[in-house]
Image (cartoon, rainbow, N blue to C red):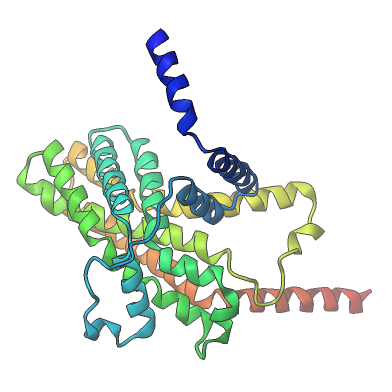
Length: 309
């Protein structure tokens, strides 16, 4: 203990008061962002605290054929500038999620919650191009393209970018369950799981976009109980989508235990999850139109009620 104390006193002179003050300010901002349930701000502040910066030079230059679509090309170029630390973290989280899914297959069903939350965190990094688009709404609105279509195209690159992490997860599952069928079922369970992580993260990113009808304060007119319930649902819905994406492993487990059609039940579960993810993509595409329709219907109902009185 005395040696550690002496070493700490010796190294204290190398500390920078300005850096410590800056880090404490970032920690205070992070606490405030957590209070507001602003996950995007928490992610950005964490990167500043860990001094995680994008690479100056890309890992691989994006071929010209993939740059024909500006949105897809921009997303690929963003992925190619990911720092090594972020890539390793995403891979480790995916492998841990795969281990949790193996535990769920062995009978520990609540492990899908751990797997879903880990894949949601991976998805937050994967949808970085979409999050950057949402962070700059003025530039998005100035582009000659509908915002819903723009954000939907931003989902293509994260879905493709999850492929190497999916492979790492399948390898992890095979190490824990060394059977030939593990590879096939690993893909059947893993594809909807990783895509659900991207879907949950995309919902979290898109819900931060400006409301097209200016309804940011709509919750102020509701009772505190209803407003608080709505806040909880909005915060829990994105991770819940990621957790739902892990449900096919439960179907796989029960089919093995009951002696039912294992492949058929698993593929039906995976297809069902993919259909749900398709609805998520449709919501991203039509989010502005849905908000406008709902607000118009609400105003029409209020007008009719006032005229009836």
